[in-house]
Image 1 (cartoon, rainbow, N blue to C red):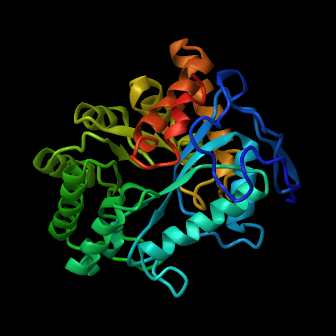
Image 2 (cartoon, rainbow, N blue to C red):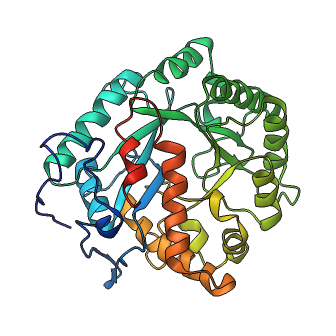
Length: 354
């Protein structure tokens, strides 16, 4: 897929600041029809009902040659994405280019600047935290790095942290001891509470675990350390209505991604349909789990347009709500969580569709 630079909406090399964003009437200015192809079948991404916000995207994890992060952000902007949160794990994402969160922030600012120069002034932020795969490597030094990153205006909070009790046979990753995972989750959760920043949770049960033990243990941790007033998100939700309701009762938001569109996941779509409007979020978790009907492609943020379309209209069919009501709630919830940090150039997003 190729793209031509659009006319920038702000000064070249910058993301927009307060007052630059369009009003409710033209909040999707710059939208263009994008296409993705799978097995010679072409999918036209739908025009969204409201601006889109990808609350969980791994911008450094792409493997495809066409997935340069700048090009990815340009395509996302054209598809209607007007806010994005990516992630930095101080253990698994450490490399020569990003040795720590400071390096990652500089890399992200450069990517966002070059995307803006190409006509896609898309505000981006990052979360910092240790994925449960790295539980054994969570040292005091790692904790100090996570806390220090929270002083960076480009850092929106803590994540993804949590509990993963699943044996990953593909990568031969054995789950760390559950108690140790809970301790590390609690420590990072306490940091989010103390600093009053959002936290995103990765929770995965072992295969065939009807008791959903990872979710049960995570609820116990949240009851112990509290939920940040700034917000707590269940990332990539793939469970049932009862599980969703338990975490909503604790004060959490729930983020749904491409997997919610898979044919077998009707109980996940039911959870989306009955989740309170003010707790709904969307994400891609790219480069993983592209939505139907392009499942199997390497996912990218632009594809959230298809996820939104599928889930919004499925909820409409079940509840009778207007698509625009659901779509706007998804946007407003995302901005409320990730667009209000002091010094953030995402603060302007509150007025984007007022």
